[in-house]
Image (cartoon, rainbow, N blue to C red; front, side, top):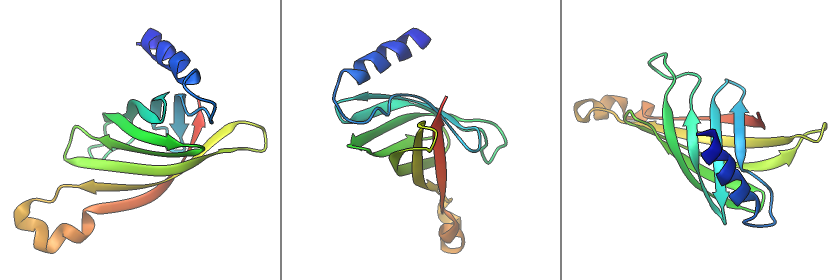
Length: 131
């Protein structure tokens, strides 16, 4: 798997002159993602450090970049989807930081929608740094 990731990163680096989102990232909760960028399209994988079940989950990443902006979505192997939007910035020490806002929606059983639909969307922020 590392060979494929290395090849995708090399391809990503030759696809444009903009900021480099490609590579391995980790957020403040310990969730990890790998991003490959070809042109303005993002693909990869995301593994949560935490989930509702207490176990980590892995999902495929699909998204877009536009300059130093990024948007990506993960469709989880459970009935939930999370979308992030963010911007690549530089920390005081010169390292890359990806500041994002996210929204996650999860399925509510049809019979429970009248009472529980309000709780089906959660929102928050994540800060990712390179691994």
